[in-house]
Length: 463
Figure (tube, rainbow, N blue to C red):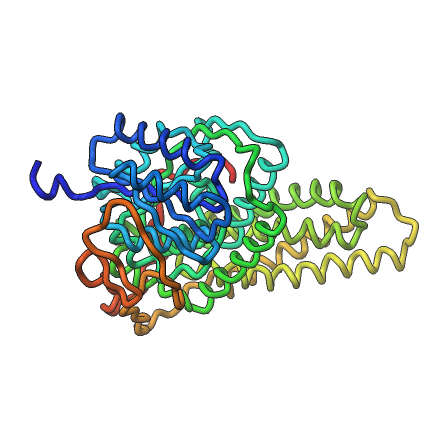
């Protein structure tokens, strides 16, 4: 083996918090699998974030026993924080992570890292929502997971199918640029990293996995959902305001467009818009009927209209006006919500008028009136979408944001200790990584074409 072949290829990080019961058996099972199935040099890193049970002692004992295992201890809690430290201090060419419960079948690990080692892809994720995936979990968690991914598709225009599966990998050079832009240090870390990667034109590879729910999961579902929703709104806001410098990352790492999508003619736009609007009207009616009994007429109208508007904006952006790249996607959704507000005024006004003229009208009459009002709102929506939201802008040559001197972590990071096999170099808060200077995105660039592809191998299953 030459020196290049002997260099560390894959670092599999296992973030842990109070996992004294599962840690030893999981690490032994993981290292045994890697020794048998991984043909490239590998390492396992236990990232202990503020455990208060016997997890730190067990981790240190495993690192002392096995040369392929190292440990990072940090007094600060947070899975995202632990991953930033572990990935930022690794010398491996590919950085992965897997949940300590090993809910994901380890047989998916080689296909996860292979396209990153070859340079074909930039980020790789396991997906439980592909048709060929096999998943065993309760109905409640299945519903929450799919609803969360539907929300991400609507709000942020993502195309990857599963944001929260604890089974991901990223090339080290890509991580060096993306990690400083990820602000979340907890459970939303994965989603934020993937959204920034997609918006930057990076290739995201998806691997269908077999997955069995851990009945002893430490995730507190309700607070996690609230944090994720806050994170999604924050990222959408920052993308719309240009706070996240995705254009600079695109210039440094993104793929150039391979062709331009022609915009449909006016007649083609009308036909496509009518198809999308007709489907939206049917979905709206079904949702209204589903919500009307429990929420009341006005709340049911608002909820049904909001859901269909998010989907309608996405569909019209892609199919009616042939805008498929990540540029301005969040802004388009925001403008779509303004259009939604006008549509809501029209439909709500129809309800007010109906209640004034026929206070005893039944649900069927309400539905007919609302359907007619929704058709009127649809016509208004087309005009606004075509002339305002999705209009062809007059392009100037704006200066792209410049990012330089990126550090591997966000904010002031506390010290952390390591044990086990030492790495050749450690990343510092000033941006030093693997014995050199972290790549920067200091070169100016022009915004990519809206048709620039943002991912590949995306699965067709609904999130």
